[in-house]
Amino acid sequence: MTVFRSNSSADSDTSQLDGPVAITEGRLSDLIAFTLDHPELRLPGLPECSSRLNNAHRVYLVRVNGLVSAVAWTVDRDLYAESRSGQQSPSNAPVTTLYECWVTAGMSANALERLLVTLRGAASKAGAGFLVYGSSNEPALLAAVRRLGFLHEYEVTSYQVFRWRRDRIRTLG
Image (cartoon, rainbow, N blue to C red):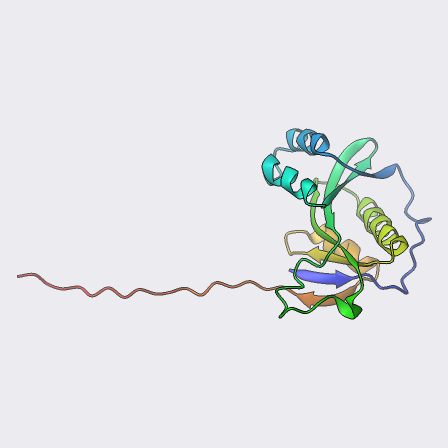
């Protein structure tokens, strides 16, 4: 997973991001409807979504022509700060993190860019930085992040150490 930080000097002008795109904060009922409309997407279960919402996570809906085309999860902290040897985000400043984004097939890059610009603007108004976590499973999100000039912050890698068990074979006889 790659983590990108919003470039504070990047332009947040949305005039070139025209079109019938609306970004709204969602609720659990919106997630249920999205799940029913898009069974092809592998989404977490409703208990997990409910738990996230109860734990101060926010969900944003991207509507294109009135239809939900993407769902993005944010939280007001850097989720991997503790795993990086106890480091805090740079300058210990508050940070908003977009950590998961579900995108329907055929969604325009314009809509994803509008989402990122909107969330970056909201974080900036709150005096917070803005991080975006993107994996190779989210190529549209990664492309939008790069087009908007976000800076590479760090990589999160996970690995598993396998324990090999060597059995001895004995011949009985």
